[in-house]
Length: 379
Image (cartoon, rainbow, N blue to C red; front, side, top):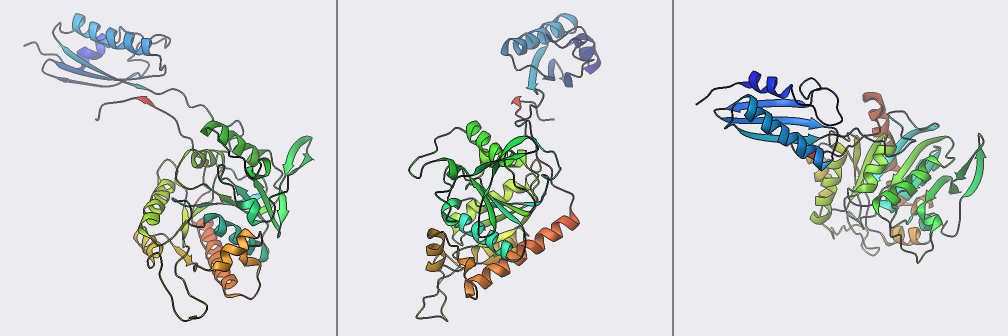
């Protein structure tokens, strides 16, 4: 049996040029790996063009050349990876620099819907405002915007203002908080039936075509899950950190865990400031000393401990929280109540973790995600 080695294969491949790439495939760096074993040859190459006919041509040329120039009966396997140059999804993409005038951008997320994420966002925003911070809320829940209702702004519409010769949206303001939402541009009974790119485009307009002014905190009310909107947000904005909201039951915690994992992915790397447990327990008015753990006990707290993420606090299951949100007058506005104190404590924890994060870590960069076609051999 004829013996040949990697050098023989590379010499042969130097005679092949991939269509449209000029240099031979070895000189251009297209050949990323060559392995030989007996009469078998494995060649890994990377190409810029995803065109099927170019890939097929390159594969055929490699097989033919190796069999003609090295060994006629060689068994040749070609693995092609297509790695096209990344295209920015947004011409206004900010890479690692804060938005002008906005000091901290906090994403409020949940893996599962119905856990009270928007309620928490609204009350955190109001509590921050009462503490003296300049606050804005971007309702990024494109398909189920609820922030306009909670801020009693359902019938409002943003005005247009001229900033440095450009027309910008002026956020609607109530309770000392600036608000923008897709809900301002749709009718209450109108479903938003958009594919991902259209939803992302609308979201970018709310971010970049708005006159937010000076803000200490911008809170992003994200939709539930880990999908297209989340990636669009993180590609468009350098998020300071994320807060994950969950209820204690196992079903919600399983999704919350995925939400935490999304932010911690190496390609995303957004610091998770902490976890908030909503609907932690129920205390009936006639039994003020009793706590009933309707959805399970301290599930989110245990998740925080398991993932080594700060636990920011727990919120009880109280009818007045729901009623206040539905009425457009969030419960954090009610001075001197026990629930206001709970929100104050949680908000202080969020501020504390934000300060710690800003001292310990560099500014988060807007992520870039590229799509890679094809597959490569495990090396």
